[in-house]
Image (cartoon, rainbow, N blue to C red; front, side, top):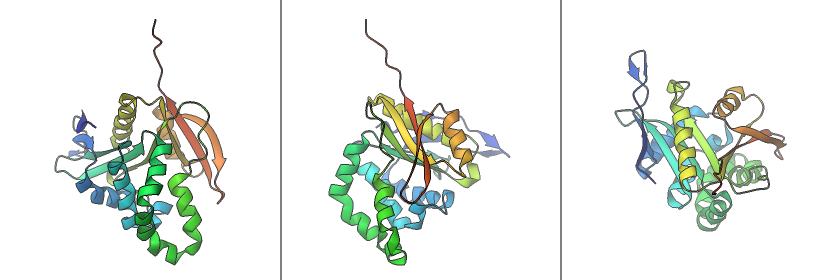
Length: 223
């Protein structure tokens, strides 16, 4: 994975730089990425599972050869945004279950003790994506988080663009992601603005309505 895929000219809002560059996620950046995730999604299920669980979640994308992760950094090194996903989701999650199941169990033990009924949802949150549609396997964008202080200033767009370009370079036929269908208009509008297409909508066992988006790459036919 290229260390730095995109250098961005500083965007200035109120005389403050938004971000300097996007670079590959490193182990040293997991902790700030987790803290950023907690601030960006305070009421979401993965945040409820706590920082220890989220550290294992982000680390999994560093430890697997099909994992892809990037961060947006300010000039002083602060992490302003992070995106992670897998080039081949099926193989990624199979290896995750085989190699790291016990670390996720330990990391989520506190949350499960506080709310035992959440255990089945924990498994689905990690591994279920509504059933991928027929066709070529797509790279899965698992999470993208931007600091609330710089949302709406191009950080998320740049992160998503770098992640998609990395998937393209690695030979993916396209990309996919899931996001809430209801009470989530800004996120849905964001993905549509980037060219993602709503493939279908499904309901989780908890009754949560989810949108499944795809972004397929055109193939040039050889003469």
